[in-house]
Length: 288
Image (cartoon, rainbow, N blue to C red; front, top):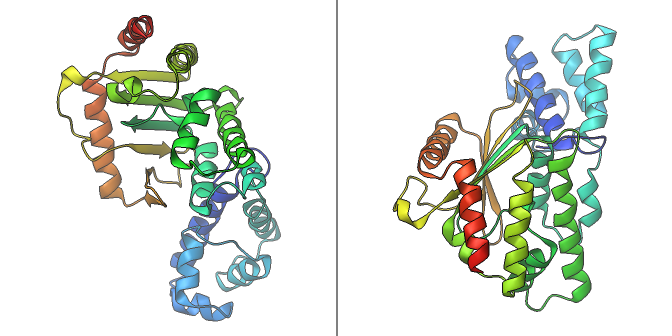
């Protein structure tokens, strides 16, 4: 699941290619089992291909196109070109030694999204963190990590942040619980600088920061932090990303995504408006 600039679109392009192959197969009334047999693979391999969860071989796609009756040269070339794009490595692969594979998937999705909506309860969102704050967070989770390893992780997060000021920048909505903002990571100066950075980032037209004060009480997102990703391609459904200590969940089932969308909408009603959130942040910064 990923996309963006050259090499940045592999995951989403895999999803798009898989969706197109599924539609072609279904339009011909061909079972996954028969499709798998035609490329010397299993039914489960076809399922994973159609979900965009594996890489593609040009020969396999070419054989499937033949099976599905796609004979027009231009259409075949377009699909095979998508295979090459889907197999391209994203920029984040250069950080492979410091990022788990499950997070590489998320970075690819993040690069491709047109809309990112997130709710945070523990940390300032990674796309809004300062370098010093990032370093403190990483050190907390990896106290035994070598300095060079920590700095590579810091560099990775800073590289991700370039997305918000790029030509293809998504609309980014960050709802942050008051606790995520009050919880100190590092010195008071680190936190002052962090709040100032959020204030500056929120000045961009594509960034909305919303503070959820303690005074609002309980809310519909009591289960914890989550991220909703929406893509410009109509073929791709919204996805929910749930990060855990040693892995992540990617939810794309419509009924489940709808529930998270409802929770985000409810949070939007409870949280301060963008303007009031900036006032809250300015007041809080003076307290630090």
